[in-house]
Image 1 (cartoon, rainbow, N blue to C red):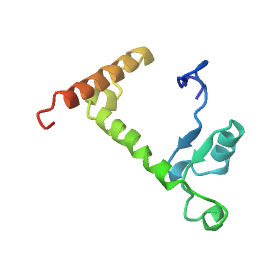
Image 2: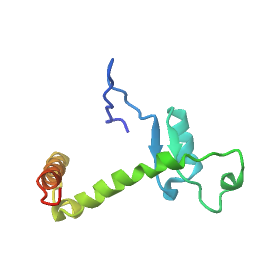
Image 3: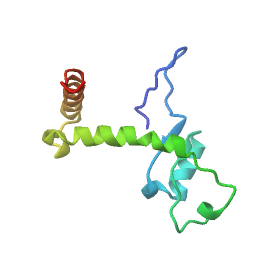
Image 4: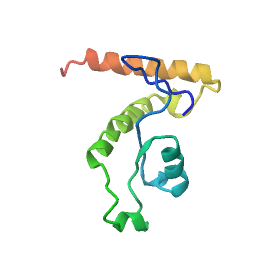
Length: 116
């Protein structure tokens, strides 16, 4: 979270997102408390066995959570590249370069697709 830089129209980039979406695996008090302490609204659905799920006071932003599928699809597209899915590159700088190349390849595939 410390390496995030969210560009703003005016002023320096923000270091923290306004909301953070995660699946039910991240639904625990420790994660939710950390997010709230740092001013981040959690978009994490409650597990079925949690009391907060059945409490009428807790509201869940379903529309905001649905936008999470964009990230899930992007990760799925990246895993089509075997080099990234198996993490052949051990150095972080080389892995980041391969991630950028994979995203460029994906953008070019979409831009020059014969289906469009």
